[in-house]
Amino acid sequence: MKISKEFSDFDDEVNISVPYIGVPENKTRLKISDTLQEDFQKLFDEWKPKFAAYIDPNQHTPAVIKAVQDAFAVFQPKMQDLKKMLKSNLEITLIPEDYAALFIHEDAEHRSHIPRPDKAPVNQIIKQDHLTVDVFTSYPEAPHQDDTKLPDDVVKIGRKMAKVAVTAAEPDPDAYHSLEAVGNTVYKIIFSEEDAGKKAYLKTCYVNYRGEEGPYSNPLMIPII
Image 1 (cartoon, rainbow, N blue to C red):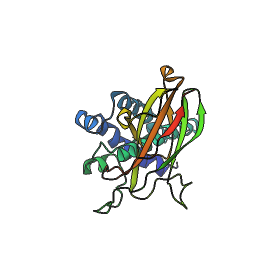
Image 2 (cartoon, helix red, strand yellow):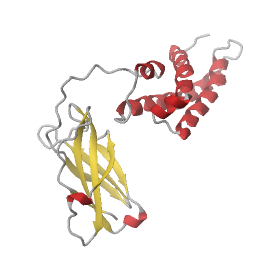
Image 3 (cartoon, helix red, strand yellow):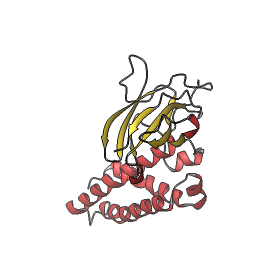
């Protein structure tokens, strides 16, 4: 009977990781919602009997193998997404116990001096549908205008938005409110039904690993359709 090392290693991992994020103080510090923690607990509870059957010589049938393969295909990517989310959230400071219990790869230490971004990005609409718009925030200078990865030393894109009537002039700076920072250069903005017929103005900036913002871009006007 052949046992997949990938499945076995994953089982070792989730037997530590899932209980760890269920500990109340860990859950609170890592900003893991009740719903998210319950989703992982459900996946874990479904995984355990399937893997137990998989490693039992008396139950290692093609159907059991297929069941654990299907469970892994769902569970493992979600664990990876959780790790990425925790690493990229600037509001969370991971401690050594987090890296160990959640099997998070620890990046090489960043330079002690990280420059504040000095370039303002450029924004463009790449797709628009009813109450949604896809935006590409790009580097302003050659040869990187089409790069879809963030510039060096940039971890997030800060965003501000103002919404006004379609006949109104461009809003004053104090009319803008902050949106959640994003870690991708291409992202979707979703408007509410009450915004239909208005126009929005979007400004963005680059944010470094220390949370320092660079200069904001010129506003991008978005008609809300």
